[in-house]
Figure 1 (cartoon, rainbow, N blue to C red):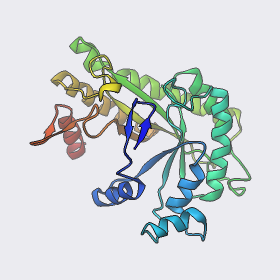
Figure 2: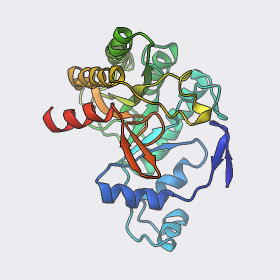
Figure 3: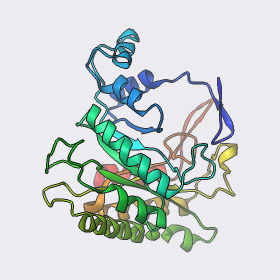
Length: 285
């Protein structure tokens, strides 16, 4: 058991990477990992390498012969945040992310890498995109049909006390997507990325209705959602549909118990109000 320093809790590590990937296979989910700039190559080798190397052999000793072939890897998560032990300036992050991206692509050219953004309309986003959306001859083997970075991550949570403001607040995310798309285009133009290189998309890998005052993160962030919140989630989903040409991935945060549509109890699973728009959109949209 180790201290979890970002959220001031404990990490028991009972559910490890092999267990998680087995679970993904069972439920049909695509795994997506966030890396740190210390052990990134080791994790990628463990999951994806078929070579006779240390971490690939460690995976084999743990009972998995074939590589997992994990496709999506984030270059850090919320590295701008003061709660992060490895908090960085935008300048430091851009330098490190770009070099780690090159190394990871050299290890496995099939993976898709996601930059750590902020809200999509911050100086962090503008700077990181300008410095990292480039065509790198070495790590891409000279290919003009491959990109070093596949997506740029942004995070937004919405909430308001008054119903109308709460239900319509996700419209702000639509503007964030449009601004991020513009910043992406600007970086591509200024860095003279060949037009044959696939255009990067946006990874909206944290979105939801969340009021930290109502459900503090350091106390579990167990939101109790209302009908107004369900309508807000519906607006969120409509935003993603309207802006789908810019979206490569969109993940609600989180799935169970923590600001989530599902809550576990001793008697079973409770489906919160926000569960129903997710179900309806998955069936009919």
